[in-house]
Length: 247
Image (cartoon, rainbow, N blue to C red; front, side, top):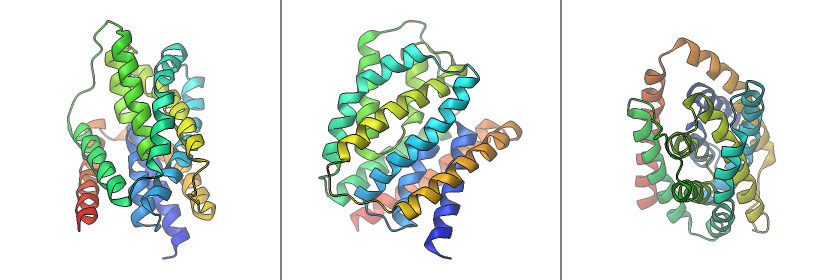
């Protein structure tokens, strides 16, 4: 199996996860780029930002057409994360590969645990400006540092902190993700990290196509079952990454 075919297959799987779960699927991108396509951690986290921007923007447009985006809440939340995203993006490009891998593995464990837990986040009914700023800054830092969309963190934060209805939380989180990822990618533009576009673009294309199949899958399979399947797989990947980084 050639590297190109691996890129196509991996992209389709990531898209399937994104489409079926709505959030949390993009965290599979970095390990796929590292362990299947041979990217270094720095290259993978930068390439992941490109993939996250394109796939999230595509999904955002679909959510906007359906009226499932709260633009004001999303822009306010994103604004708090722009400076942390830029700072973390610059810092990430200068850290050792082991540090990046361990940090990503820790985040992946958190994402897996969230997927494996049942139930949806509940809004508090009150909007707290300090909490919203803190949550937005934290998400921006995670996006800039590790090159992930962070939708699995953004969705519950939007619901609990900004009182965004769950029906609009996924669409609104995509707006936040795109804004943070664009800033983080711009911060890395001056680094020496090179990107293999011959693998990134096929990966992105099949991720977009896979997301459509994921949405159809979500309509037929229990969301709890999907979360458990992907959560279990992500937990295995996270543990393997952590062990590999320490050996």
